[in-house]
Image (cartoon, rainbow, N blue to C red; front, side):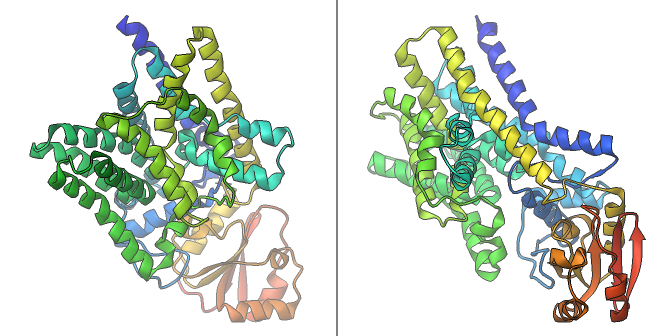
Amino acid sequence: MTRRIRAPVVAVGALAAAWCVATLAFVLIHSAVSGLTFAGPYSAYFPLDQLRYLAWIREAGLHGLISDPYRAGAAHLYLQPLFLISGLLWRAGLSVQAAYLVWTPVALAVLIWGYWRFIARFLAGSERAAALALSLLFLSPLVPLLDYGGIVNSNGAYYLVTVAGQGAAYWQAWGYLPTIIALGLMPVFVLGLEWLVLRAPRPRVVVVPAAAGLLVAWLHPWGGIELLLIVVGLLALRRGRGPWRELVVVAAALALPLIYYAIIAGSDSAFSLAQLRASGNSPLLYPLVADFGPLLVFGLLAWRRPRDVGEQILVLWPVAALMLYLVLGLNSRGTALEGVTLPLAVVAVRGWRRLRAPHWVGFAALVVAIVPGAFYSAHTFRDTFRDRAVPFALAPGEQRAVDALGRLRGNVLATRYLAPAVPALDGHAGRVTAGAEELFDGGLAAGAVRMLIQSDRIQLVISDCLRERADLSGLLGPLGFQTVRFGCARVYRRGRASR
């Protein structure tokens, strides 16, 4: 009997882990087969974030504290534990890409273990496997239905998929490893919080929620705010019948990283919640209904007044996520939804139990809840990859040009395609500006080129292999630039650019 219960859980965990690395495997295989160099991104949306992470790892490896790598002379303010360790690994000889990817098995193990522990607290038997599958692999099937069916326009589809992607755990595993570790620690925190309330005043029961909360808030401040709201809500529901001192210690552990973020964001907006990572924006509320409504509908079937601490936390978690989503600004609130699928999956499986449907119907419903969204996610990744707005992999000439650029100093003018990759892959010491595509396609007059070079004090110009680029030697030569060819890529170096 025990084996029959555990086997589906193991199968779900293995399937989820494989899907969480699917895009990474695709980009790595594509790079190897095509003779390209893996550049770092592998997310379905906002791949620029991974290039920013790589640039932060370089900064952490060199200075400990991170500055804004896209702005010359920015102050070093940001301490991030994962990137600091990756930075030291990079200094030890790993490529910056490999130094980031070493966290992949750690992140997946923490995620699946944390989700499993939370689900096992509330469900038993085969229901655990169903809830684990939903919590890790759910992306609302209404998203492909509304998009492919032409019911929403392109803007509506964008709002739907960005909100749905924040709730899908595997979507975050596609590039956001610190987030995945934080998501796996959030259920550890809430389970520790329940144990704290039940077992206080034993001092050692404070350690688990305090340590987990500290790491969550440090790696994922949105999750830290949610957990702080859960603590406050729990105190309100219990009406003072709680271990106050222990809960204050836990709240303080959550608050410390959040205060730190507030301080550094006040000094440099590059580290504000709106800038730490892209989250999209949705000015409308209907995406919430479409993306999480299917889980919530079944969850309402199992509604009961929460009486014990665990049941109260199960309700408080999605409420805290919704409150944070509504309070934060458009450019930062989507990230508040990350992790909310876990409690919703638990209550949805409970609701399905009330229907007393045959097992095969439940399995079919699980397939419908997961497979269309997974297909749509893969389709979205394919579109992002083919769009080539960001380099997922560099051609040999581009890699050599970027390497050469890293050995020089001075302000850089790069194509829009290469500009985000320059600080990440060569650690260039200088401001990197994305130039107008008309320049690199040869469409700017000599006077306009001169004004552009002089106004931004450009000493280095780099072109890519994205398409046939114009030879700018004739335009840049009279301004003191020398041309170095690297196959299909070029670097134009002004005399003042020093090694």
